[in-house]
Amino acid sequence: MPELPEVETVRRGLEPVLAGRRLRRIEIRRPDLRRPITPGMAARLEGCRVLAVRRRAKYLLIDVDSGQSIILHLGMSGRIGIWPKAPPPLERHDHMEVETEDGCIIRLRDPRRFGMLALAETAALGSHPLLAGLGPEPLDPAFDAAGLAARLDGRRTSIKAALLDQTVIAGLGNIYVCESLFRAGLSPRRAACSVRGRRAVRLLEAIREVLAEAIAAGGSSLRDHRRTDGEIGDFQLRLAVYDREGAPCPGCTCDPVATGGVRRIVQGGRSTFYCATRQR
DNA sequence: CGGCAAACCTGCGAGC
DNA sequence: TGCTCGCAGGTTTGCC
Image (tube, rainbow, N blue to C red):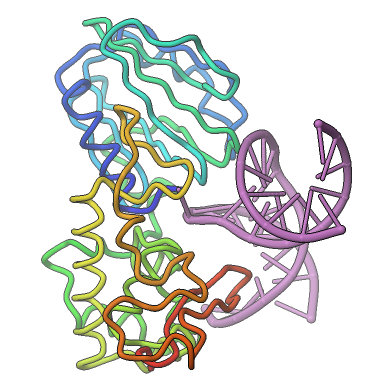
């Protein structure tokens, strides 16, 4: 489910209820996520005060005043729910429940259990195995088109596969790679190393536009993603190509009857959606 | 190192 | 109605 905009949406929901609050109670109901939850995590966190709720790539980072940080990845189907009071009954896939000092209930639900939940020293987060290899944040102003081109240089794989590689650029997933390539007018099959100069400028601009718009819309809710208040995001209504095989591509001059509209191919075992006319 | 497939899980929609 | 199949927003591992 969650790519950068969905995780950022969740972060913005968590921050006001967590930042500055003590964690009164933490219950791990099921420790066997994609990676087993750090043993003893609940006991080490109870009574701690939250200092900050941050995001790195698709990871949420929750710093507490014991010098440790929670690292949370939502996998494919992970969802965070927040109830200021009177939460509904626990459900089958609610794997963790947190209660803050003011009685607010926060739950992690993840049916597929592809998520990850770990505890690590805040000062050493940069070298943590889950985070160490991550590429730059696309929205970081210090990252520019020349930097993107440098990271694509020498890569013979497709630009689609390269953008999905979290060590090249962090936070993009299948939806936003497809949408960014569409906006940039670049074929998903193009060699990654051929994206430099003006093409790299166009691509980074497209990535930033798509991400910013998606964050503003609260992310894309194709099936699992929810804001922390349970409402869906809205960006799926504005997707140009993702999951729109055969549909006419918005703003495109190609004739959908003649071209068949948005095409779907499989790259690296995952669906890619694109417009063969506009994307070169 | 690069690239690809498989594995990890459950749920849902399509098709029969 | 009920079954099977394919597919899903991610990451890691293992094999060529």
